[in-house]
Length: 268
Ligand SMILES: Nc1ncnc2c1ncn2[C@@H]1O[C@H](COP(=O)(O)OP(=O)(O)OP(=O)(O)O)[C@@H](O)[C@H]1O
Ligand SMILES: [Mg+2]
Image (tube, rainbow, N blue to C red; front, side, top):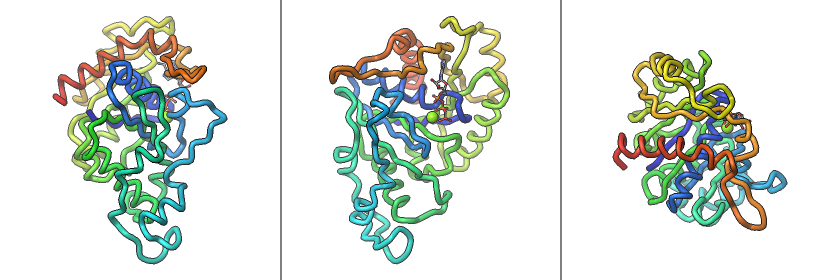
């Protein structure tokens, strides 16, 4: 199952991505968690200590030069099919037994048509991840999917759009739906985040139905309650042990239900 997560800024993409990774890991499934947001914070959500700097792949100039043969960042000739199949093992941050985290960095910097060496490596890596790996993949994206190449987009099993109860996140979801169509990414789903009255209870059916009704046919396959404890992270690390946070344990059934829906509807 390879899932990209997108949606409006601040709606909960990183939290949902981390919860999906955690839910898979707790089922004993290998996961590659990809932070494809230039403003990366998936590592923090997955319990990587704040003082640990993870260098994004796009800033690894030596690796990029070695892989592409590029002499400098922009000019000259360079390979368009760099080797990338060893990058996950070499550069991923391992989190617990089951999760590999890859931080891509500013993948979208040059826009969709950019073919600088760094983007070439990252795009090749994305294609390799969706086509060449058995692990589950969850990709935390920014509020758009422009930088997913066609090959990657068409091979993703699903795009999960995070929305909330406000008007703007659904508008963003609908804009992303159009981009997804242009890229050939077929399976779109939505999940409603920060639902309920803040006490951890789910939203009432009428609220959910109202959101679903504005989604222009994108199936709403689950909801996560508003729970301030999620701000402390989805996984926590102490004494070399990675554990789900209290909030994650509380909302595990809700996120497992989203995974089950995806399994059923995408059939992976
Ligand atoms: N269900 C929830 N209940 C309470 N707080 C939440 C919930 N989901 C996310 N948050 C909090 O809201 C903030 C934004 O969430 P998050 O970083 O996951 O959103 P994002 O869409 O990834 O944001 P960005 O666009 O900046 O990448 C964070 O502080 C997070 O802890
Ligand atoms: Mg985020």
